Length: 381
Image: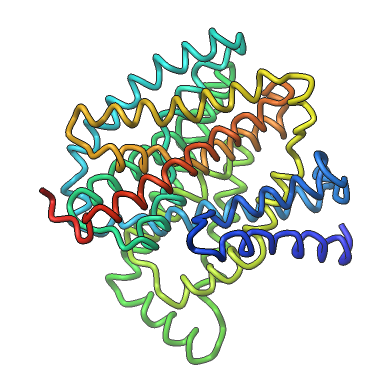
């Protein structure tokens, strides 16, 4: 990794905000970053080597931070959100059953033997995608909160289940690693809560802000990277580390200054670098030799939309069901793990990302229509 190469990566990542700039397009910023990676990576001009160790390491750091920010933005302290958990749990249980059936069907149809993985993908949701969509459109009210509860629940369950689904042969080792990471996140939550109760957090915040020490950011990064080390030791994706630690911070309450600092380092540098690395790692040429992988991606995306749309039978608005189907973190993590560990067939990582893009496109349109048809604010009727 050289400075000119890093400049190329950062310049390419600007495609994300450029495509997201026209509001009427409603293009998520990560889509442009993925496209940028595709253009300069293995499927395009081959300007960067996604296997270069420094690039891979920085991308892993970016992935951990992206998932941390996603977890920290889940409104777990909202009492209305917690009150919606029972209904959300029922809907998500129904989605999981339907996704399991659909996953088996898709795996049999394409002969990949990846039924558990496909089921997890189609049952998943992405708080990292749904929250920005809801915020940008100003959606609110009981129905939105119930949907957000469902999304948060699906995100947590899918993140825990993904490593088990991808490599069932290592289920015992993976389960131990998952338990270690979740236990670590639980300890962090208890320490943060006690620090909040004793006023330690406030004192650190005042000193940090007055002296410009950025102590909160430094401490959070120490914890994040320590837990990431535990995850690597336990052969667990750092996705679980970032998201569970983010939830712990959200449960206590994230200081605004820390949120701004994290936004700067994640959204300005390491997050875009991760998505560019992922795009650069995808080999779209494999679609030429395996065109059925394009169809697989479409099946996965449309399957996720279909199983979530079925929640209309349980009283959920169709638009909100499609919104809840929006996925990003889990398919990206599956593609990342598959690329790094060689667990997926040629073209399959790109198929997973294609499926996610299908759900994002439909969910964005559905949310826009929901807001445009007089659901602002949602009166719960």
